Length: 347
Image (cartoon, rainbow, N blue to C red; front, side):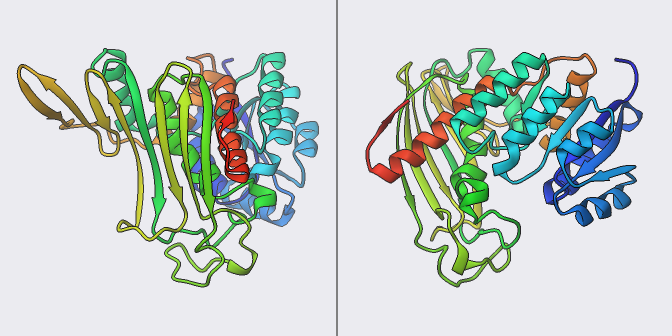
């Protein structure tokens, strides 16, 4: 493909306007954002005017039928990821879908099948994979510096970070709270650095202790009366290779830090904290900490979109695959199922 990549946007909310559209536009004449669709059609119209997008529509189906597109970004609430992505793939478009993959494992599987059948890329918005800390650590891991990674911790905690906007506290539209919204980022980052091992079983617990109370909101006041998701989720994951991972995720918890997003890895030759990157090793009779003195200053969001564009234009395939999306969805839904029953779930 030598012409500009013709892109459509589904969902005209914050993630589309703050991340996807601006970063597509940074690609210059390699990308043309042709259309945007949103069920709140006035919002689509306003976004089209704001960013100089020629067409706006009320539905993804109308957009796909009306304009010729090469790729589509899915920026809707989680409930609509699968239907929008499958429609775009069946129309012959590559798809960049925001996280999480879907609401259910069956949806994630259907999305992967649609991508394989269409012969198109389906990549997910796990932008932490593209951060400089993760990229640097991945090179160390690939070089054998950590050895076999057998234990990990994924942390996504906020002291009082319940979103005061959007549908993040609506279980019907999102499927859950911090586990599926922010915990999924650190879970994916950990799995990516571990080589995406096959999960064997999970044990999870969820809590709703603070979200249904009126309180101080560091991300604005939230609708505590209609709060239907968990405000904290914790989990333990065991993989078929014997490795384990502990997950902590919360929109609101009585902790010291305002927020913490991190992954901790432990291997038999070294360990690491990812954000900021520090590697722990024993060398030449000493215990040492290795920290990069310099990393390039480019955001994970920008690189995520840039690399998706490169892939669609014939470059390297995206580093996020539909198969990984299915595996991740199994873990998420397994943790929620375990939390409901109080029993471990075999995957």
